[in-house]
Image (tube, rainbow, N blue to C red; front, side, top):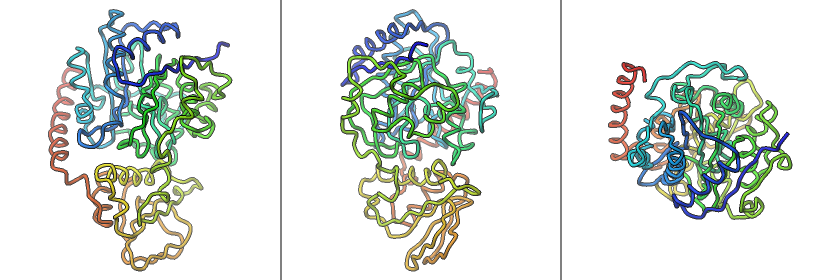
Length: 429
């Protein structure tokens, strides 16, 4: 069998003409023929004009893709996303500049949560036996996934496979979003299998992936094989592909080899050159105990398992603290002393002069617990809103919940979301 191909192209700026030429040449190299209804899925998990500028696929990369399609006389193009949980995706799309982009290009831009969802069986799902899939994805003739290459707080990297979390409607997003998250990601590949991948690796990011810090890698990655491009991406980011749980699981479940010798890596930039480039603090917020803060962290197992619940409450804590620190740099080092516990912690926790907060329904200390006061935030996993209220209050941190600009935008876009849902239900869109 012919080896799957991954193309690495040097690209140091977000120049539309340059990126368009790279995409056009790569489509030809892959012998692809995009046609019919096109669905484009970028990564717009979050965006905020004040302090989150690099968490999303740059609009110029998507613009370049659309220009290539339109040069082929393709007009039926939809760009869609279901961004971070609990906040209208249309808000993030606006903050990232996507609505302006869509207007200029004359294409359809949607929040997947606002449109018709079709219950779709997943014949090979381990946990997701079905999902509510957007009609725009289900009816697409050609799917293009455009991820942002980033380090990730619990999956180590996020690229193509992890991008599929954003095809889930918010009402199903948190299903199995706990210690089962890595298998969940593989489940979604069954329906979220793209025909073309164009990965934005010009600026990659580290830290909490939804409020990250950028560093220039200077590359565009292109393929038509999601597992192969993720294997190559993991190697570039400093890992062995088999060290990334969801990548290893996808290979074990029949989606292809992750051995680099079984992948045809080409292009005009060497994979070792990309791997050697500095990537910033790659473990920032991946390991809570490494944070520079007086807050102490105690991570335990998921209930009735011997598995750390890395994709559940522990991930929620990382996200909460990562957002606070990005919004107000220096917050964590100046926090009040105390402890945060996630999961079933098997040991003693002795802090009689300081507060301890238990995160999640099942979290418990299976040993001696001494604290000035014990708090709990309930949920499985906990919601961001509850964390952003309780954690800042206990540890003296600035909460994003009291930002008047963000609060007003949330309210306005929540109302708009409701109106569009009603309209689209009436017209079955």
